[in-house]
Image (tube, rainbow, N blue to C red; front, side, top):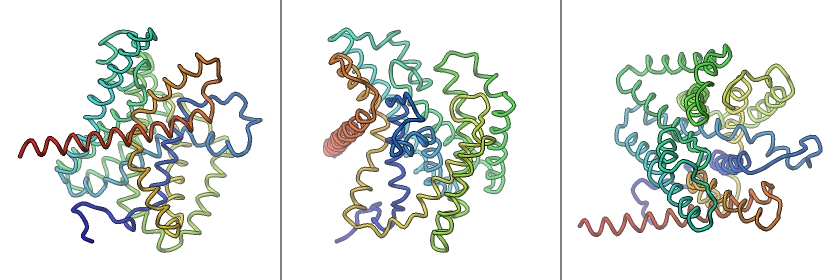
Length: 356
């Protein structure tokens, strides 16, 4: 059977990274819709989820720049344009406008009053991605777009070595302004939608640089040499970082600041990158890859799914923001992402036929 152009073989995937994307996608849902009232008395099997949920976004940023390092180095304009299109269109049109339309209809029919300031909410959502009454998680896309533009600008207009040097200087500078309070003092006085978007640019910059650096220095190839030793070493480092108070004390910021996240997030990526998951059955590999393809869609729509779940549960007098609810949100969001993707593919196909 012939491969389609651009098709990636199952063997070309790092299954550990693919699985990590799915897990971190679920962790994002936990951040937004899981309320933990008593961490000390929490059942042990919930601890891995609770202890890593705030690492989801840093891990996603690392993976995002790890996967596109070659495009930056090659200054592949077409692939960068495709990346911008893939980020901007869902953010501005499908999600920002979609949420606004969906919640406006819900307000009109049920009287929920989810939209607080009319079209002003939509404008601020598109501008910052952090409007709480719409879909505040989309600040991540805004920052991802800005950092992608920054990296491409550096590699397009400067020699490779200079661009890499500037990225590392900017990353170290971003850490510096987190610890001396400049970042928080600069943006902390603004409204919540502006400060969390603008303040997190410097918080995400080190993770983008780390992801790029991991690809540039071919960390993935370490797996061929001594993956067991690397995984054990990374686990020991994680244990140290979680147990030493020096690293867990964070500077004031906007949720992702400080050395703890900068050290722990790459270790998690390395652990999953080195795991020998290529030995699992082929059917399971394909299932993991298939689910991971809808992670971006899950990320985009889970906020609405969770909001409707909470509305229904509260009206039934049932408990909200439970772990079980988050599992349901994940499943429904996966199904919704699958349906939206298939509709989009069919629309594109029909438009292509109409254009012939």
